[in-house]
Length: 433
Ligand SMILES: Cc1ncc(COP(=O)(O)O)c(C=O)c1O
Image (cartoon, rainbow, N blue to C red; front, side, top):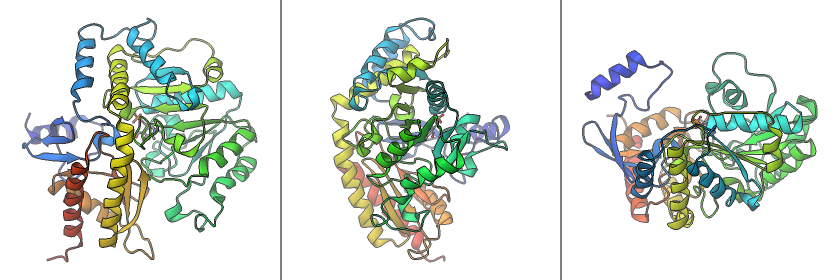
C-alpha cells in the first residue's frame, strides 16, 4: 500500500477515535535501534519509543533471536496449559521486585488489563470496594481503568464507574494547593487522609498511582510523597498499587521500578509497555497473600503467551546483562543537563522534570503566568518531525513534551537529540514571516 492508501484505509476502516500525531500522519515502515523510517525512506531519531515502550532499541537482535526461536517451537497454549517461558518469566520477576516481596505474577496483554487485575485482587483481599487514584493519572482504556484515570479527556462514554475518588497529585510546577516545595511540607500527600475520611466509607481497597505520571506529562512527585501516601492508605486498610506501566524495567535509572526511588514497597505492581520492548504483554505482580485472595478460576487466552513471555524475559535479561539501569541513570543525567541548558536559552520551557531516561519539558506562554503553551507544543512536535526527531506529547493541557529514548542510547545520541530539539525550538521562536 502507498502512504496515502494507508492513511485513507485508516480513515475509512478504523474507529475515528484512533488518532495520529501530526497534521500529516507519519507512516512508519521500519525501525532499528534508536531509528525509525517513514514511507518515503526518511530516517528519524526516535526519542519516544512508540509510547515509552521501546526499552532496548527497535528490533533488538538479542531479543528477537530468542523470540524467533520460540515462534518456531511453541506459539500458543493459553493459561490452561503450563509452559516454560511463562514459568521462567514469573520466576525472573519474583527475583527483582522491591525487597523480593512481590512473588506472584498474573500475565495479560496490556497495561489496562494489568490494572483491572490489580484492582480486582485488592478488592478480593480487603473486602472493600473503594479505590483512591490520583488526579492527572492515566490507567488505561477499559471502563474500570478509565474510572481510575484522572483526566477528563481520557474518560470516554459518559458516567464514570462508582468506587473511585481522586486525590491531589504532587504537581509541584502547578501546585494544586498553591504552595511551594519543600516549605509546603508535602501537604498534597497529607490531604489523602481528609479525602478518605470525607469521600469514602473509610475502609478502602487500594490506592493506585504512577510513580511518575506518564500521560499526565511526566509529573514527578517529591521524594517524600509516596511514603506519606502509603502510610495513610494502609491506615485505612488499603493496598498500595504502583502502576509501573511507564516507569518499570530500569527506565528511571539504577532501580528496576520507579517506586523504588521513593522507598515504598508496594503490595501490587502492574506493568506492560517496555517490559517486552513492544510485544503485547501485561503484568500484575503481587504479594502472595494478595494473589491468593483472588479465589476461583481465572483465565487469559493470551496471558503468559510463550512468545511474549520469551520476549519479556529476554528484555529483562538484556537490561541486566548490558547494565542499562546504570546507563539510564548516567545518560539520563546527561540528557537532563542538556534540557536544562535548553531551558536557559528558550523561555518557552517552563519546567524540566523526570528521573533517568524519562524526562519532560513543560511549555508555557511565559514563566510568570505559566499559561500552558498548548499550540507551541503542537508546533514543536511538527518542527521536530521536520528535524527528523520523534518526541511525545502529554499533560492535561497538551503542553508537555515527553522524552523516553531506548535505555541503550549513548551520550552521542543525546547530543544529536539536543541539536535537533534546539533547531526545532529555534524555528518555533522565529517571528512569523
Ligand atoms: C501508566 C499507564 N498505565 C496503564 C496504561 C494502559 O496500558 P495499555 O495501553 O497497554 O492498556 C498506560 C498506557 O499508556 C499507562 O501509561
